Length: 136
Image 1 (cartoon, rainbow, N blue to C red):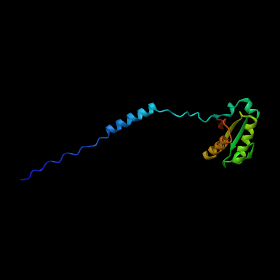
Image 2 (image 1 turned 60 degrees about the horizontal axis):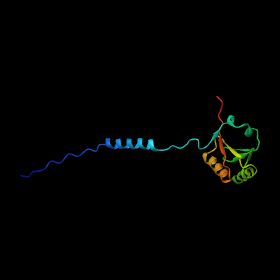
Image 3 (image 1 turned 90 degrees about the vertical axis):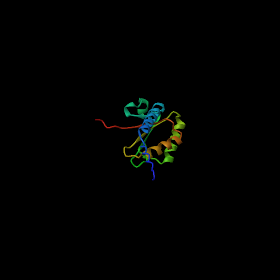
């Protein structure tokens, strides 16, 4: 006579404890994390420009980024080297000069970042983005 043991029933793996731990971790990281300041890149509307900048007193350079990604200053296309030279000359005359960027709605983000990199490499520290919104 042979006696056989019954096989032990398989333990079911429950996901409930894992979900509890994940929710606790989620709450912990949400409470303890710091969030980025979304105002890191200042954006100005045309209506918010000070009168000294709007009058063209020479303290601000407006750089427009066209749909082709090229920077334009006073309606003339600039190479990155030419733009850097223009900013260096402006900063030599006025160290507090600011640069306002006006990207086209069809300009790529890479063109905007490349232009900002060119401007900061040239020494510009007062950069602002300008957005134009249609009137309702």
